[in-house]
Every structure is written in C-alpha cells, then in structure tokens.
Length: 338
Ligand SMILES: *Cc1c(COP(=O)(O)O)cnc(C)c1O
Image (tube, rainbow, N blue to C red):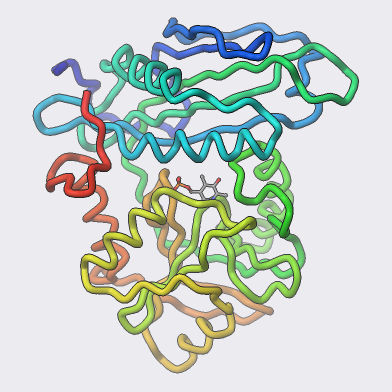
C-alpha cells in the first residue's frame, strides 16, 4: 500500500514519462535478467535492425489507484499472451512469464508515485525491438524488451464521425493484422490522414477482399448494439484480439444483452439505421474503453447513430471502469493488486 498519489491534474496523453522503466536484453539465444532503472534515453547503433526492417512489437495496458490506496493492474496476463503471439508472428523470441511479471510488477511498484487518483491511471507500454547491428536483411539475434509508462487522465472522447474505408486495407488473410506490431500502425497513418482531410475523425476498416464486412476502427475493435444485441465480428487473422473487447463482451452478456460474434456487413447495420432503429456504434480499446460514433459515412451517405446518455454502451463502459477502479467486485479475477 502506498498513499503517495499524484495530484488530480490533466495529463496530455503520452507526454510525461513515469520515472522508472524496465529493461531486459536477449542475446546468445536467451533473455538476460532485466532491471528497473530510472527512465532515460538508451543508445542504439544506426545499424540496429529495428530501424530498418520493422521487427517491433508492443502492448498497452493500465494500472489504477484503488480506493484503499493500493494499485490494481487490469488483465496483464492477457497482454502477456498477446505479446507472445505478436512476437511469434514477427519471428521474435517469446518472453518467459517470470520476466514479464517481475518486470511489469516491479516497474509499476517503482512508479507508485506516478499512479494518479481515480480520475486517471498509469498507462503501461511494454515493447520489444530488434537490436542486432546489421544492415543486411536478416532476422535479428538480439532484442530489447522495455516497459515504460506515463500517468494518464481519464480519456473520454466526444462522439466521433467515422468513414467506412473502401480503398485502403488494414489487414489481409495470412498477414499480420492480429499482431500488435509497429508496422500496422505505420501503414494506417496515410489513410487516416486522408480521412481527416475529408472531415472524419476515424476510419472503419473493412475486409480486404470485398470491403463489405467491418473489421476494426482505427486502432480499436468495433461493436454495434442494435435491438438489444451486441454485434461484433469474431477475432481472426485480420482482427486484433482486444482485451477491452473481450471484457465488454462478457459484461454485455451479464447485463442481459445478446452477444453476436459473427461477420458484420456494414450494409446490414446501415439498413437498421434507415429503418429507424437506434443503432449504437463504437470503438473498443484500452485507451478510451469505448469511443462512441455519432455518424457513419459510407459511399458518400451519412448515417446517424444513437449517442444519448442512456445508450447501453455507456453502461458497459461504466461497469468496466468500476471494476478497474475497485468500485465494484472483481468477480472475473481481472485485477492484479499491488
Ligand atoms: C491494441 C489494439 C486494439 C485494442 O486492444 P485492447 O487490448 O483492447 O487495448 C484493437 N485493435 C488494434 C489494431 C490494436 O492495436
């Protein structure tokens, strides 16, 4: 228990690093023992393979101040498993659980003073990069595993206007869409900028073959609520297995919504809007938990979504936040307390 709590102020997301980081290196076929140390720059050769061939993987998760002053980390074992899936797909060595746990919990403990009160959280960013110094194209033999963090304020997005993307593709079968690798983000900035220039806040990605089935929104998963049914496409090779998505689906089922995980045709959703049904549409991810959409644009037509205060998506967000902040019982065993 640690009563040292950062004051309730608004943090620009990702601007202020927490004071300590965890570093661990992989060499000669194994992970060395890592250590928590003061946050600071590290030195890499310009030849380091991560600068050239994209072997970078990351994770994102949060630690929350609990009412008794302790700290609760949300579902970190799920992030551990996903990180290893991403690492495997990128040809990178997996992280033993002991190193993950020691690094993450040690780093959070050392950063206790950087965990804000319940109006925010400590955002945690584990990542792995290829560090072998070689300009030739090759699989790196050396890696760095780091965990850094930043205090973050509660992130409530105002509702967004989104565009169904039918030109660019985020992920294709056999590709790396399910992996949390830097390259997926690099490839999304140009389509995102074009959507911004057209006046939209975000993109809805569709399948690579027909651009007919929805996949994700920006860097979030995507869900709809229509007629008391929560609809979301199943995770797949092209859809990242979001931990917020997983949590929201469980909570939705508990609150009496039908949960339907099957391919979602964008035209079916827009048809429901045309029929006058209140359609809730939202992104789902660690940063915002739920990001509501007020409108969806498809082939030049704009369709309005339901974003009133009594929308069910906000109840789901509230339930999840209550668990994270220790305001309701952690019956799912999602939290790790320090
Ligand atoms: C991280 C991420 C998500 C959301 O996953 P969470 O575990 O809920 O944060 C969804 N889609 C993509 C592409 C992502 O990178």
